[in-house]
Image 1: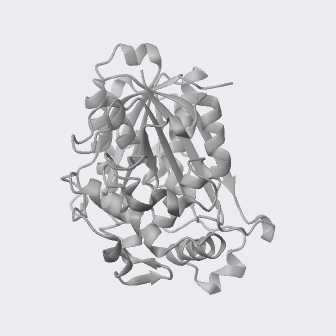
Image 2: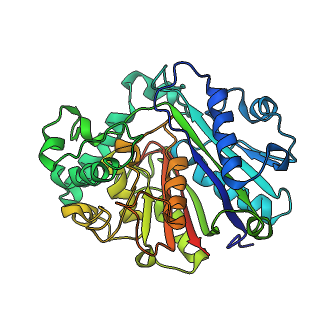
Length: 382
């Protein structure tokens, strides 16, 4: 059963903090919830569905109780960086099935203040733990393989960061507001060959929230109408060593599924929110969901093609994870928020896309190229 057009984003909120040593994680969740409710013109008593992921202290039950919610639908699916894009699809499914009518989705975390939450481990941990794989060196392996197979260069990777910095300069809350050059990126310290420090996302405290509801209710509220018309989710794993190709992600399945349900093509998109934990993440995902052929992502992003007002695909106009914020490795929430702002016409005037009526939101969670999930959503201004 299709969920095309069944879910409307009636409220959004992004927490302005990037460092919150004086707040608890639960408090950040609650403040984000309140902000989204105010944006939608609702109260917590209107909410009958609640979704959060592994960043919520105590889980979905504890957070719902903390915020005083009385709900009939709960979901706590945890898929790392794409958790909240998947949550958007699950909220639409719940609304379409009559399980909820107004769903609150919250994200919050404090990795800048304290240690990151422990990463979930899989069945191979007894065999792999001794090798001490980190997020950085796994993504570095993906970048090296992409370079080996397709000739991608460090300069091409750097253009992703350059685009993010051009947008972040207009965001008063962005952690890194200075515009950088390709030379700045490739001359920054090497973190995990071939990834330099400026190829890596920031680490921030913060959070965000969305309110998802039906068309009937959305039309009765105050915000411009933005709906989801396509959604896809998928998994990719090494499958016991049977699939060790590091150059593609589960986006090769989630992207086409979302575009097919929406009845549109990548070339129809006016704006793209693409998860940017590292520069290589963006290049691979653009290829996987259909914006260019596999191996052509480096050429696609070069020469400013992701910069709003300059390039062919305006991307992450809030500065993204590379420059703005990246709370608890779950950038999918912030990607939804900026896409909705673009579709409402509420992005910064310097980066607002003219007549922005179609946007794609896409992200991955886990370890790119190895075991991870991916989710894609197509949003439309009505």
